[in-house]
Length: 282
Ligand SMILES: NC(=O)c1ccc[n+]([C@@H]2O[C@H](COP(=O)([O-])OP(=O)(O)OC[C@H]3O[C@@H](n4cnc5c(N)ncnc54)[C@H](OP(=O)(O)O)[C@@H]3O)[C@@H](O)[C@H]2O)c1
Image 1 (cartoon, rainbow, N blue to C red):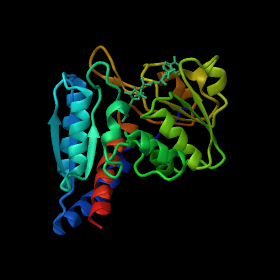
Image 2: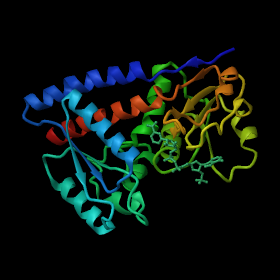
Image 3: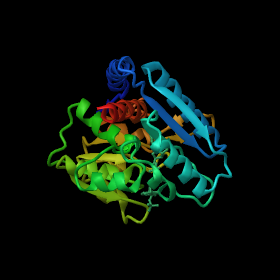
Image 4: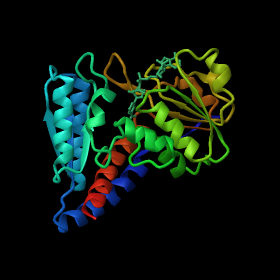
């Protein structure tokens, strides 16, 4: 058996079409939706990612500004920038792009983003709202996993879903989103003993680690659904996930990398921006 590919491209296109209509409505009502991405790095893959968000935003009618604070920015300077953008009524969505300057964690500074504008759920308060079951904005990647499963008709209520990875931007918020949808959730991490024995019991397995090929056929239960969040750049500049090619023989369905979670994540950042603008102009 070979796993059915769970593409994210069609879903992403449908989200972008909806966002385009809503952005035009906002612009007609003199509230053009505006996203600002704050950067503080010279990292090339980050620069590529930011420019791809800016292009995607422009295509759907969202103005996207990039505010570069430079790789030497202090935590205080970043907090002041985020506070000032939060207070600016013309800015509806704010992303604090990572990586940050050495020694600064995202949660050190993201608390200065107004949660109404925190469209990638980086403020620890946004995670708190999610954890109590009333999200304002969830991190887009975590939400993309749920949207993909829904889009492909994979039921969550009562299903055993195992997430490998417990970061504040993917694994932890995803665990809460899954709990909010009545899944039974197991979260694994680098200290999990006998990873494959844990993961193979899951109806659905989400890999969010950042290690190419970590998840092999041995980690996948027979006919489990596998969502590959990982993005790993290969030596020849290609992109691969965390799931080894052999896993397709065990899984019933598997997201491709690229073309799975990634495009849905970007589309959701755009949807969150128009949602934020709609709420702020109501
Ligand atoms: N497609 C998208 O749109 C998108 C968006 C965001 C991120 N990503 C990708 O998703 C992946 C994860 O991102 P992240 O920001 O969450 O990474 P991260 O902050 O580095 O977290 C990685 C997680 O994996 C766990 N881990 C590491 N080695 C492991 C092992 N051998 N066995 C089990 N767990 C292990 C870590 O455990 P500990 O906590 O114990 O260290 C940690 O919880 C990356 O590839 C990233 O590029 C994709």
